[in-house]
Length: 599
Image (tube, rainbow, N blue to C red; front, side, top):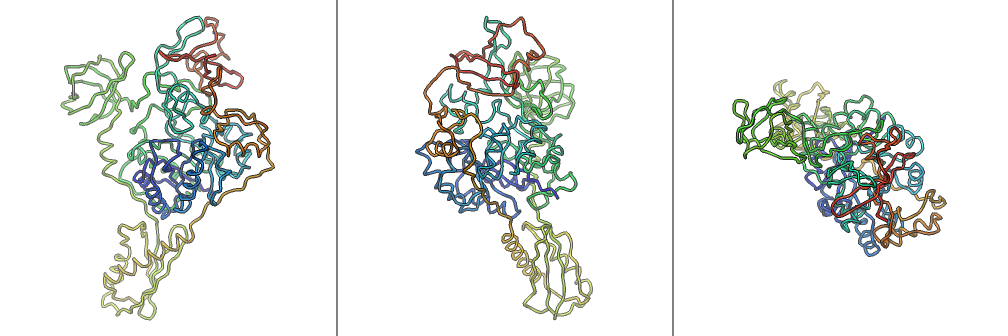
């Protein structure tokens, strides 16, 4: 039976636990340093607590160490890796090949998408370097993913939900160029979420001060079955900066999608018990796209705003001061946050109360009739999420037998682990046959443990009188014993082995992001003659590609050069704002766009 993993993000310990409780089979979390989200680092103590909690459910914890490292950081990074191994972390998600030249403990390594896992030749090479899992580039289509699956045996991880970087991962240097903050060092200033203009070479304006690089969020809910059929091992949700409500809602949604697929096993154990219906569109989103999953689409960006707009909920009919009458598609509730676009800007309002169809807002509203309102904060749904905490329970069945006036209890969990316990004390025969049902009811009360007893089979004719306190003590010992057995049999992840005979198969230049001597040694070992410094250490130049992306502004504007001659434009085109000018280069053969440093 096919086994798959749902992998969720965790900004901190509490969110990691919430992810597990809502159906994540694995959680990825930032290390104390060197993770690609500098604002989402965690202490070793918190990571250790998350590991202990996740492992109860056979869930795993992966730690992100996916930045490039300077030489001065190698020693502390190596020490941190050993500390993470000692607390039981299951794998590291890494970018810097210099890590392979460290004195590592036997810890499993995953190749971060920051390694630019886009070209199949590079993916094959990475597999031979001992990486047990490869996190694929978000830009790959179903057909390309299928080709990769046929080519490699390593586990494959695919992003299915969350924010999209407009650039191919690991190949964006715009933030470093503009602000001295490297995306490959976890410090991205997100220039793609800024306003930009586009003109041709003689000044004809195509885009005027809009968010033309700000991609919508990824949502592959409709393609989960396709990815399962291809053979994807891990389904990844983006969002290590997102809050607990977001992670709970989105994780619960994708867990339900996977559970609905027949003949599919999850790598984690346990049943999720929730009192809310997951709806990702009610959490933060910039609008959704399936990106390049099936075909190249238009409408990949929301050029109006990089912020969350939420769901459209109605059209404005009348406005009177701070009161709005709308034609509502959904019920609006007290405390909801609404927004609308006017003159190219996003405006937000808060609904204090709803009175006879009128929305009474927290301030005077200047919005024109006919304007579409969006709900970007659903107060009722958020309140429900905060109150209705999900729990995860490992399903067990018990057997009760009587032997020589003693109780013999057996617990068998959903993973086939068995715990058998015989009471040391003997018990008197029961005076009433009802004592059998009372004993069964008492034994089923697993309380706040991680177990849920679904049935008890009383396998003896003899009925004993077992006081409630004695039954509780026996059940507690039985479950503690089962927990120890589960820990002993938990499946471990082990590192692969690097094949030193393999030559690096692609062009080796500064795009390899080499900024330390160990990374350079790695490529020298794989027959690269000359290793150039990565962008962060290289001297300033001209004409370098600061961003490489499959997103194409021309296609977004309905001007794809494969379909339109664009005789009204003078190429090259320029991307600019009040401080920067970049030349745009369109590679129509490869269907990609580059943002180039000004020559």
